[in-house]
Amino acid sequence: MPRTKSIREILATGCRSSKDCVLQVVELVGAEPRKLPQLVECLWAADPFVAAGAADALERLTRHRSSRMEQWKEPLLGLLLEAKEKRLRWNLALTVPRMKLTVSQCRRAAAALESYLDDQSSIVKTSALHGLADLASQNPETLSSVVDRLRLAERTGTPAMRARSRILLLKLEKPRSPREPHPSLHMFT
Image (cartoon, rainbow, N blue to C red; front, side, top):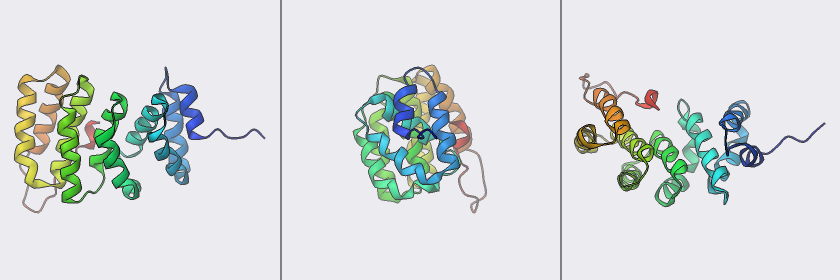
């Protein structure tokens, strides 16, 4: 019986040109959650394709089940601050705000995401806006500044930033009862 490839091997061989390997990893970790630590470890891989593929797979896995990431909050917050590669940055910008964060952790994540708004990549900037909106749903004290940031991006950002800002503003500004929690913004990732 042939040996099953590790997540790192799957990502190293297939992520240079195709999303097939990312989808394969998502399916593998979805079926075998005990492999999640192996995936998270790949975020720090020296090979930027492995790290970016791992971030892509993790982003997909956390769209509906971010609670599995709780034990990696601090390392992922650190990586959010340190990441330089654009695919890693845009996927972390969407993933980290999905985790249940303390007010202090929300502030750290927001500071990192604010710095992402100066990135050359429109996708990184757009993902940072989305991450800031997700953080505002956890930390309502930032809501007005995030709404202001989205309004500015809606007028002056790239086409992707303008479109995402319109969608996020509709969700954030939607009237709701005082007891109703903020809506999840994850459906737009």
